[in-house]
Length: 280
View 1: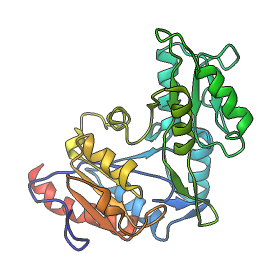
View 2 (view 1 turned 120 degrees about the vertical axis):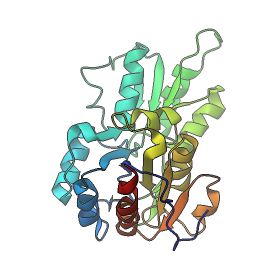
View 3 (view 1 turned 90 degrees about the vertical axis):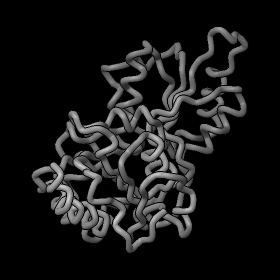
């Protein structure tokens, strides 16, 4: 781990793509992080840099996320938004599954996967109105199966333990509920979003390898460690959103920097490009 004052990227290392986390990194609730709008615009304006938005957010549909980002002033093309919900939909389609959904918003699934019973899997996202005893017990009964050759999968859109809520306080994420269902049913959840290596690989930009990609996020485990484990060239942990003092100590290996916010993170990338362009 390098110190916060040290540039993480050597002159021999080229970063041509940046993946940006959303909640906690670019905004909290409907309010952008101070300076985030300009920082993102500067990254997007760089002629040799590709920017994508990679999120575990599972409470809203991709359409609603785009509307929220636009209303805050961010400019995001639909094809540049990569969500764990859409990754989940792709998984369900590939495996011809009929999910029971513990989710607030299933619009990304409607018309793509069957949602009526009988269900042959359970999908868990961040769903404050659904994660109650009745709904969890229904999920338990679907998953509880003594036929070991016909296990019904438990699918976690992501399994973050907590997040920074709109009131500025930390709140429970879906992770503890996924763990409870695993414990009760002897299931092992399939994780769709960060820190899944497959999810990071799905975000690879055109022909740019992950080794020339940098992840910027506020979650040391989901964003940063996940990116490093996926083989990304660099990762920047911002001290906004769900960041807690000492979180950088959770990260093992890789090229990692800690910054106060997306503003400083963007500056590091842009300063490196001044050097990196000599190697392109």
